[in-house]
Length: 94
Image (tube, rainbow, N blue to C red; front, side, top):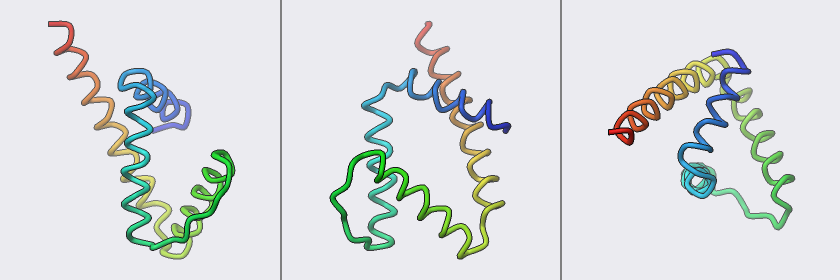
């Protein structure tokens, strides 16, 4: 999936499911990561925390040499997200 298309999926998901729902999903996913890594919490602003998460995830991908595998899984999951939203939209129209 191309970057522009990927970004469109992110925006569509936020619009479709709502900001609060997607924030809850972020919390759930990050909670799983936190449990696995037992990372110490730091008191920082939201943007800085997000940058830290992205940086540390990029580092993990390098450590485990899984850049391509992550991109492939992300592509699969984004396509599934699009499919799920299309199905839910169709059901809501009924």
